[in-house]
Amino acid sequence: MTRGRDTGRRGSAGLRLRLAAAALVAAMLAACQEHEIETPSRAERVEEAEAIFDPAMFDTIAWADPELRIQQGNAVYAAECRRCHGTLGEGDTEYAREHGLDAPSLVEPDWEYAGDPAGVRRRIFIGHEAGMPTWGVAGITPREIDAVAAYVTEDLRPEVLGAGSP
Image (cartoon, rainbow, N blue to C red; front, side, top):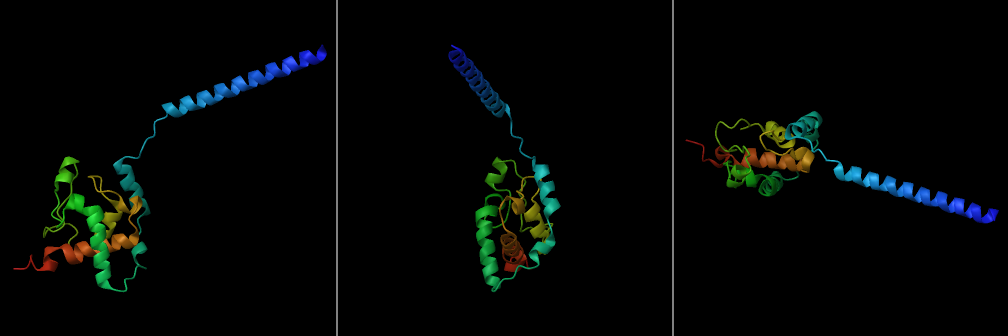
């Protein structure tokens, strides 16, 4: 008889342990379902990119052929920039307007970064709170940033193409 009672106690304790474990798992699942993931704001993402930006990351980038740099920059521009800044860099595209983004013209003579490849690299890396992604954090490599900055400042700009000359 003692033996039967022991089995009953162990069975009862085992059942209580399984019920407690099940309740704990249920509570954990409920907590996960109620948890809201807070993504960083655009300002926080820009601030993070600013904190990790270092212009020296571009110092070791070398191009065997300057034309290859421009071609790579054109490819990056077409894939990542054209949607907002337009095929010819004129900005204010339908996509940008529909999404409430301020995408300036990159070809206006008074553009803030005209003739400033280092400034263009910085802006591409860091992005902007008005809608430009933080590309340096979001997946464009420093080499690609260097290439697209060269494309914009050396190939896309009207003064380079002769259209801006009197």
